[in-house]
Image (cartoon, rainbow, N blue to C red; front, side):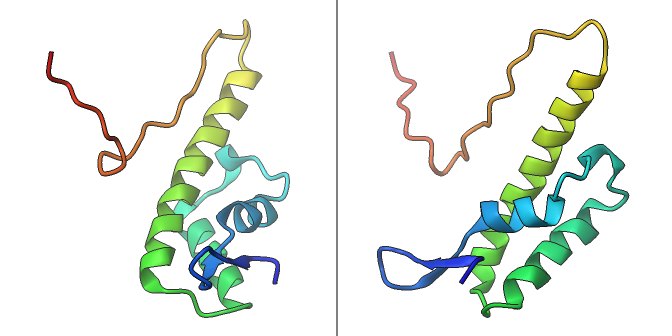
Length: 103
């Protein structure tokens, strides 16, 4: 199975990076006309191997959108001159950020 793997609970999970890389396949995200259609095609690719849980699909959809924007941003920054000195960092999801802001 190329687009899924057994997780620690013994259930099949989506290998979101494998799906994304195969669907992007050296394409420039800045030249993709419709990001929703791209993500929908990622979902269809997963469904060629197994029927994923709808919640799992919702999670990876978000990843795929974030990655398209990140890769597209990097491609854009690499095309402009002079090269800017930037660092793109993913922001944590508020539900996964465990940080106490109290002094």
